[in-house]
Length: 335
Image (cartoon, rainbow, N blue to C red; front, side):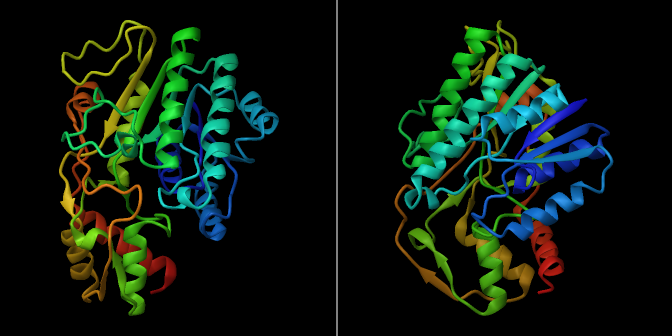
């Protein structure tokens, strides 16, 4: 099928586009190549995708409605995977406007084009950050998520709500998926794993927030992509999914659902660091720090709904995923 993927020069969008191309689909990538982090890394991701005959790239910002329209109209996508966004929880404290422009206005442009051009299914990336400081674990799709702690999370929740209105008003099949701590090869330089490996190899200390008293439901990127691809085939209907699980979040008034993508097995931050040290064969010098504003001590995904929908759950152990990242990092940076 013709699959339009926003954010193909980004971490997860790159891996998703690569998987779709390997399966024989045509992929148009839409990306703004923003300088939030190393643009060369983004260009190299696109260069790998360009080795596939089925890949084409359209470079533009999502806020540029007419430029995005040109991509949609020239390609006529059957599936749209909207992953592009201004990423990073902590950066949203410094530059909140970037999140409104990219995440809210950009997503509105995608919704409008899908309303006009009617792809079979629109899938939109959200985040576990929308759950805010909830301590009711595991975090379920049916839990309240209207108290986000950061501008980043607030913009993602705004898009979820806006998408539901489009699904209801115009009968647009939309799936929202909430990521839980994605990691893996080709990851972003602002992510913890990247910074930990970079600093340990350089002999610099690593910053360990909340003095290490944190747990994350780490999700390896290949597992995450597998779930996204399977959800692409599971198109929501106005009647709901009728999965029989308590966490079924399908809307009663439109073809819309929200799905967690996580394994439901939190790992402590200190254990994660130990796995990095074991893989590198080096000990980290640790700089223990207080919790950062907007951060949370724990995440854990409820997985029943995802399993009921696609019969699959992320399962790669962090020791394996960390090893794959380190292997890529050493090769890419000749470290």
